[in-house]
Length: 144
Image: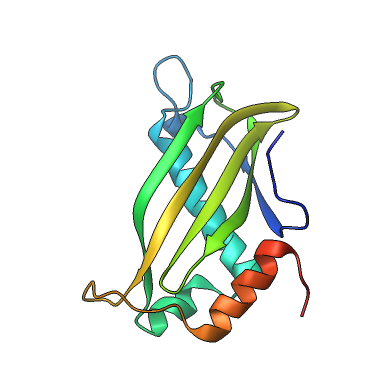
C-alpha cells in the first residue's frame, strides 16, 4: 500500500463517491482525485499543525506550485474511498504532501503536491517558525 515513512503522522479522509464526480460510465473523473488530495491536505493540517484558516487569517496561503498523480485503478460511483495524507518535507517557505487513495485493499491513486507559502498578494513568505517546528515533528512522528 502507501509508502509512508516510518512514524510519519497521517490523516485519512473517508469519502463516498457521488454521482456528479463521475463520467457517463460512472467512473470518477481524473480531476476529482486532485480535489480529494486538497480535502485531505486541509484535514491533515487541522490534525497535525493548525487549522488552515489560521494560515490565511495571518495572510499566509499555501499556493500549489506542483502536483502529481499516478492513476492505477479507477474509483466508481458509490465507492467508499480513503485518502491517506502525510507530510514528505517542509522548508522555510514550502512543503510537500503525499497521498494514497485506496478502496479497501486496492490502491487507486498515489501522488504528491508542493506548496509555496505566500501572502495574499503573492509574495513569498516564510512559514512561521512554530508551524515549521510542528510540521517537522509530524513529518517524523514526534509528539509534543
